Image (cartoon, one colour):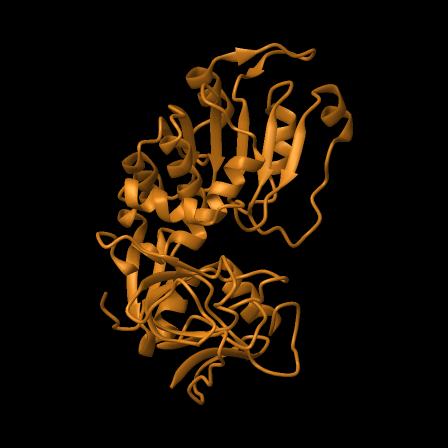
Length: 338
């Protein structure tokens, strides 16, 4: 069967591999769709999770599909169930981020499916392609949680790629009416507005901080008033955002960093102290992963998907992700219906 694997830095292939050999605690899922993202690009660039390893790295950690087989020790899951597969962690075991399996394949072996928290049922009315958005949506939800956003807060999201858009969707679902998206790409700003953002700002054509002050009001500071935006989510990956938020943000502001930053970024710790500002990293998912599936069932987030490409044309999907600054979520489809 087909499986996307990374063999060396810059060397990613659609390989023919042996079908899975499941055990009594495992399940097999026919994958319907699997998203690709910046993390996959990083694995390809590095040649593995942190660099070349002893075996190829299987890609794919944003998947949904139909259960095709269950082991004798697996409870609560049956053949034919429509499911989202949790990509795991170091305790549960990983899929697509460093283990022997990855979701960019038609037939996925899910090890330890007998353990709670591995397979989650998908509501009948929710298409599997949309259900595959659960993993990146959960990443956006965790960023909102790490920023400690509460009702009535004013929030700015830097970067309206999929994670930033899913953070916006989470904010809006939780009743945050003053949530602003910031992105230089017009298509991504359109997506932010379509989700219900208060505004979508182009940092190349306006002073973002003047606009935030106009939208959110101002707050006092020793050196002059700042925008009164309460919380910020950095989902852009731009090196300028973190120091700018610290310089221009309000006293008591909060920043959650969910974008991948590989190079060190200078930080003004005097401002951090004077403003009693909080900066937090955001990684992976909220404790209740199925919250993402619940949100997908409540709100139509399918417009975030801008490209669907069959597995056999994976190179094309990769080219879209690498080269199109205006793409939303890129899904690789396997043909499974459910």
